[in-house]
Image: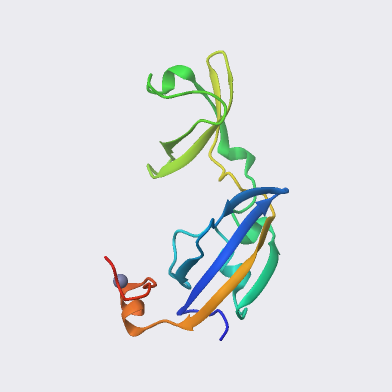
Length: 159
Ligand code: ZN
């Protein structure tokens, strides 16, 4: 059977970006209900759609991953605009509010004196995503799994 909506997929994967591992399953494969998983990195479901069990390898352009890099999402703020307990150094990540008041993850890219440059682009925006891995198993989801919106392991639902 091939990966499609409402199948349960068990796989191992590695996501590489510019030759570096960005995310991966380690030791244990993951199982998920295709089309309902919110914990997977972007584009992984697209990368395996229609595939049978076996090895896979697929490269996705930024548009199918985390979107293009948007320079207007970079801004410069004053150190005094941050709570005093915020660690402000390149690489620090925290949540800020966007114009609509929704939380958005931002990352400090540089600190020069009191000027703090923050980038609200996703870390992998503008990057080509290189997925590879092995699909161990594809099976039909049970009615119970479809009802719950997630995959169950051996022996049913454990929550
Ligand atoms: Zn359940």
